[in-house]
Image 1: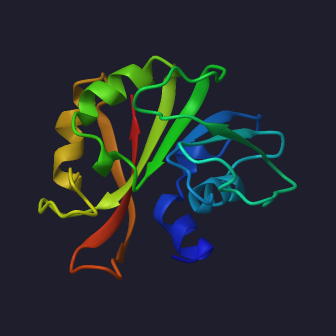
Image 2: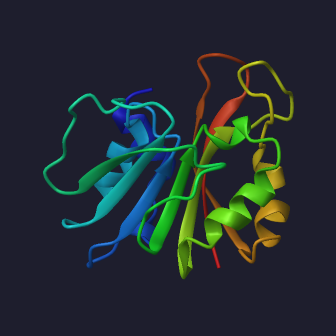
Length: 173
């Protein structure tokens, strides 16, 4: 996926801020969505790129936003981050068997008005690459369980790997 496609999946006026903010990117990998988010945040913001494997960002930098690499398992480890203004999970939650329990734990790291951005395959069919699918239709119920009632689809693109779409959504209080 291109950076421009990643930006189009997550772009929302709800995440634009005139003050620096703190976000976490769960399962950041090589940082595609960390850099997409960095494009949308104001200067002085920080993104904590969390992934199990070290060195995924490979020296990539942005001048506007600080991206801090944290080697951790976001599902199981305690994360040493300040109170977060938002969490992005792009193609990460479909690896978690009990997504709602994981999200309840992660919500405790957030300010009450924090946003969640989810990027996932819009399918209910499990595969070896998407063992616990999270279709858009399931998000509302799941996030209501952690006190988040507003959900908005931001964008979608066709998956290059299967017949489903990849969607982006933002969840607010």
